[in-house]
Image (cartoon, rainbow, N blue to C red):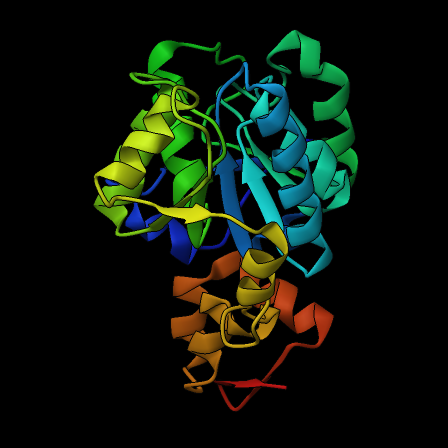
Length: 259
């Protein structure tokens, strides 16, 4: 059943405008994990397909949740390679639709075992502007952005613009001259860093200081200050009740304490 996310997602504060509403199907617990956004062309070459799959799989194995847009090409590759239970699809339509239709089975599986989110009401169709808004959320959710293959003047490059405005680090796969011209241009302009060795890259990102634990989400950090129950309820209405039920917090004499 489609539900509305009732708590604040701190990562989305980087957006130009925080979404008025967010809807989801699946496990919203994935939003508390360390997340990396991976995007790219709908028609990557064979090298990019292989390395994209390897990258997503190895990042997932060290506890990183992979975020992408559910499209064909790079998006579908990363969702599958990360494992559907450890990936987030950001949809450009209402969640009663599965777009693109060719990925309907994949999207359905992620709805059941991973997480699909959208800022669009039921019945909302795919439009060019919706994809732009979708891409902004994809970029905002990840601590960094990885572009594995992209052509000049592509949708991926629009996402790169979001990342630059948000101050996100951008990484790209190393490509030969004449291939993935957009990512090569990013390297040339000093706007991205190259991934030359996937194992080394993943090892760096799996450092304890980089992988955030669930306890460090914005709500639990707020609770460490021992706020009043009224303040916690006003700031995180749904999350307070969930945390009480799960035993993450306790409320005594009107004060919230982290357990």
